[in-house]
Length: 69
Image (cartoon, rainbow, N blue to C red; front, side, top):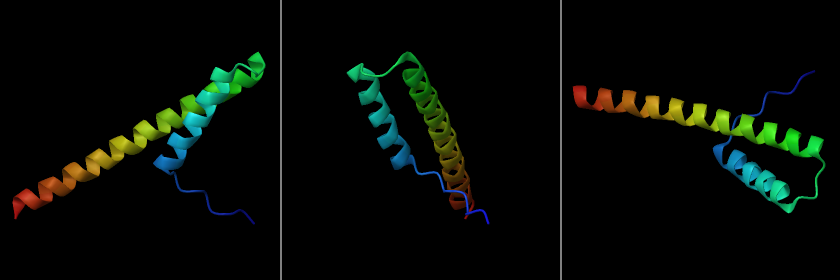
């Protein structure tokens, strides 16, 4: 049985990006490890941008609904 997919959390994504940034700055990783972490951070950034764009659209729709009344 598959578990339900985790809901995206902007706060959790930001925390993970900060962790990855610190790991990369420490310079203790191999090139392959660094590349994997960079790709993970890139994916998190893209998902965060998509999440924020969707939130902005919802706010615009709500603002439009309010102005019609």
